[in-house]
Amino acid sequence: MDKPIGVMDSGVGGLTVVRELNRQLPKEEIVYFGDTLRCPYGSRSPEEVKDYTWEMTKFLQNLHVKMLVIACNTATAFVLEEIKTELDIPVVGVIHPGARSAIKVTKNNRVGVIGTEGTINSGAYFDALKNINPDIVVESVACPLFVPMVENGSLSGLETEKTIRSSLSGFSNFDMDTLILGCTHYPLLREAIQQVVGPEVQLICSGIETAREVSTVLHHSSLLFTGEREPAHRLFTSGRPALFARMAKQWLDVPFQIEPAVLSQSMVTHVHGD
Ligand code: DGL
Image (cartoon, helix red, strand yellow):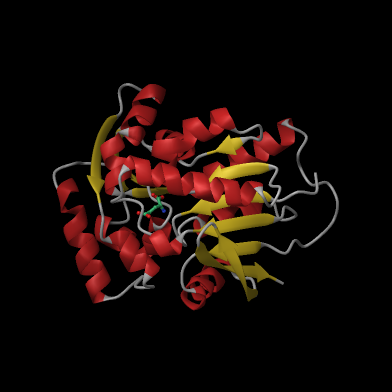
């Protein structure tokens, strides 16, 4: 079907999911909304996260998306089920795909989870992992400093490593072999995180498994685009376009063009690949 897939996040983090979607479904057009202006969501109340996520949903619905990917763990934890029930198009979140990946990879059944305060306090990963395998031992740590670091483009260097090391100190007595990056911003810090936890710990990014799920859903619902094309993705941000475009370029490896657009009262900027 010749309609785009809608993808949303509080900022640039969901681009890590877009990258995987691009890789696995190169002909599909993506319309992305990153709510950079109101990022981070992780320290906001569930009500705020719900309201903002619904605004993004409506924005993307107006662009006639055939499916919705909530590429934000915090929003997935608070509002996925509600949106799934209300919409008549398929809706996919990132928590179950991430949990499934971790279960496939772990050998010692000890899985660490890092995410925003909202995601960790919701217990959504704990529940998802335990539902799949009750024997899994889970240790969860909130890392509220990571998202601002990513949004500022501080992906490496001494300060970044120092912050990561102190944020992950809660795992020092937990012999995990697998660590879920339970926030879509964190894969952008992947190298620095791997450096801190050591090579023996497998890092799980939910993007790969989420893209697999999107592909399966599109296939089963006969929604796949079946023609030939190199799609032009459209990326919207409610924040500063220059920084967003810089991060998007770095992560997606596609050219961008910036246009203004409007989301309810706030000005957003429309960035699309050409
Ligand atoms: N990237 C988001 C997540 O996966 C949200 C981060 C935030 O805004 O705090 O949770």
